[in-house]
Image (tube, rainbow, N blue to C red; front, top):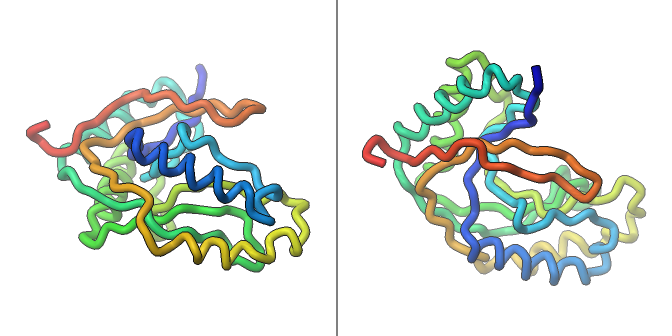
Length: 196
């Protein structure tokens, strides 16, 4: 029996992908850009829940749970806005683009997905949901001097939103890790709302 590395996410429209491509092109030219492994914009998505390796025999359980969560949701809109890093600018390991969505709909959708999958036997998330897109990972051997200007550069890009995303559905993805980066496959599309 095979396993598939699986996650639930919001796919991004082409306009958002183009905006992320432009941003990463600019950030690659910074003093710290060479210290990072950059995510390909076409593989970026807004993760709602990462499941890890799912046995193929359980995949229909995942699809059913995510469809149930999606049916209870409503279409929503958010902005890609703000840049930051985890765990801190002094010791960065991940560079991310944040979201603006004042209604709390993204967090509610993530909670609904988590609850539906918990009902199907997956463990609940232990940490609060913080929606973000990972755009780069700082290489382990990067010297502190290489990332010294990172916080200032990120702050200078945080004022204006990059793109607006209209969410009409959520997607279950399968992912294969390759030497040139992850390859994601859409396994199941789940429209939001009962009328969809």
